[in-house]
Image 1 (cartoon, rainbow, N blue to C red):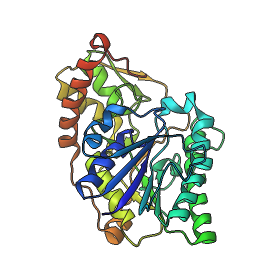
Image 2 (image 1 turned 90 degrees about the vertical axis):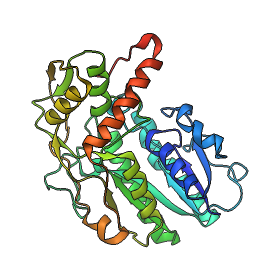
Image 3 (image 1 turned 60 degrees about the vertical axis):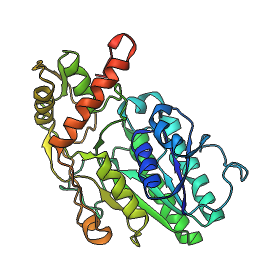
Length: 324
């Protein structure tokens, strides 16, 4: 039986990853400080025997906290919503710097392979389309999004430097826009916002004219890609995302129709450095780790509709305030 440590385990994507690993017979240790994660995301995993440790990876990880052999470490820890960028920029930077260094040290101590969850945000507002892993990006290092963009860029550099110096087995996944159940309803990203607004009869907030594009990957595809990368021999950064590209306006209209609400759209100014285009080139993922996404957007959005309806029922007073 393999043992895996998943940090940020109570978050959206990593909680699904914990379930995925348990399905494959892993012993799973989850670690989270619950800054943005939700304990409810781990209910099923905990019932199946997952061990949960409450700890902030910015602080050193005592040897007594994570004991025994660890085969794989998935560093999924980081606030990832634009809402979080304004609230905790220093925390985000330290999570990718000090926090990831502590996990690399743990990997060296235990002999574990370490996967760093990077992001498409390392490409910034890209001037190359679609985005291929060899592209260095177009990032504003002093913009409002820089705490996240530069944190992930530094985390990649730290991973590569550590590998070169200590010959640690590492992997780098560049995650593109992901969606599915367990997203926070007030997350502030496009899909939770549109669903919460449509289900409550509120105008859908569209930034700019809605002509900017995104490529959304369903969470089950995403975690399979992360696992395939971790267990592959590929040591270069790999884009994990769905290359089917849609405009924000089209996504708004699809969710509006799916909810049966037909509410109007509300246009707000485009945020600073908001990417105009986002589409992964997944040639490397297909050829080197044998991964391509399988869930189409229409199917994934139908699954989301059921989830967000339930979230709305559980909310105090049946009201959720989306972040505009």
